[in-house]
Length: 144
Image (tube, rainbow, N blue to C red; front, side, top):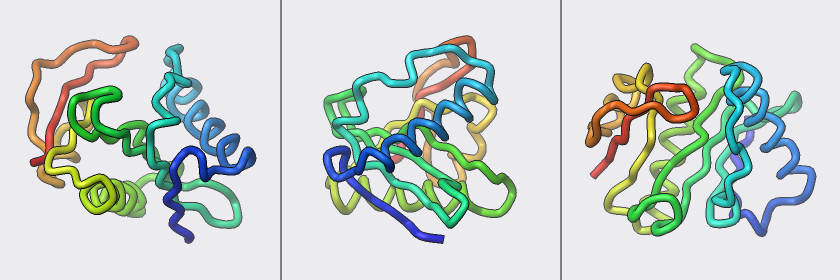
């Protein structure tokens, strides 16, 4: 499995297509949620993903501070195969990118509420009340 870390402007058209396709498959089709998937933040992000010969297996983006939050943020976290450690690996890589490449001392994530305990294992803590975004319960969490 290959790890790829690229800024938006470094992505080829084919890479961007594969990223948007897998995000749409997970967040729109699988979660049955119509929302603005292409939100203008991709151009201000590192795109971090794991892929093999069959395609993207895990993905997230690390968004520059001041774009969606005052601090660096991680979003669009997904895996296409669950229960085999890909989520742990991609989130660890995302945190590393935020700290090493973006000098983040704080990292914000808008977590789906069901995943709260998962993110807590990485040191994130809840900093907001639960709220509904695009029909799905979320909460803001921060890693310091």
